[in-house]
Image 1: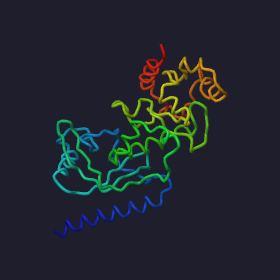
Image 2: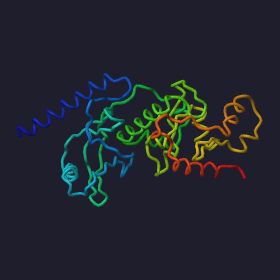
Image 3: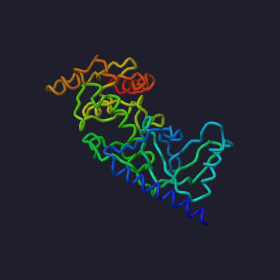
Image 4: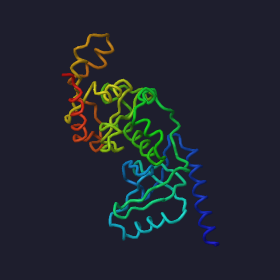
Length: 274
């Protein structure tokens, strides 16, 4: 009994320390000099309303995996960590393993009671304007899923130096992280190579297939938009983009995946008026 009490005391102390770190962060990010190699590296998959956490390579008999699966039979409170990059992470706590699928090689995480390290930034104007099916999905999604989306937004904006990839606008309150493969698509993943930093207007135009980007990073404008006659906002803000090349991240590893762009560009072509 004493060891159980001690174990619980250690967990509660860890949770208290996370609260202290969360209160001290200005951007929802925690840091450490030597990050754990055990942080999740997965996309945001939801199964039966729970966050899915995949086994490590090696199958159900690997010690880490059978130990993880065994937690489904307990009521052990855990910390769910999402790695942003080396030495930076965010977290949710307490969470519990509530299901195990050895054939699919994953467990299910319940984070319904969890606290999270979150950014103090409020929803941007674009978030409010783009009240899409995907936005609604993440409003009600498990907290661990929203942590992945928070990490996605932060890393995309960092990769593009918080400037719009189409017009180079640098007003931080007007620049957002857009998904190339739409968020509601089951193929979508919250990774930098599936993201673009776009200003509010160009985010909305991209989401509505008024503009498209081919795998060579060239911007296309829908024909009916090009033919429309309006004021300077349309002329310079949308029509003037036709034929331009995206402003890309300096790091090649952060640049949009051509396969993602190709799939999304096909959707843009389908939206062209006949």
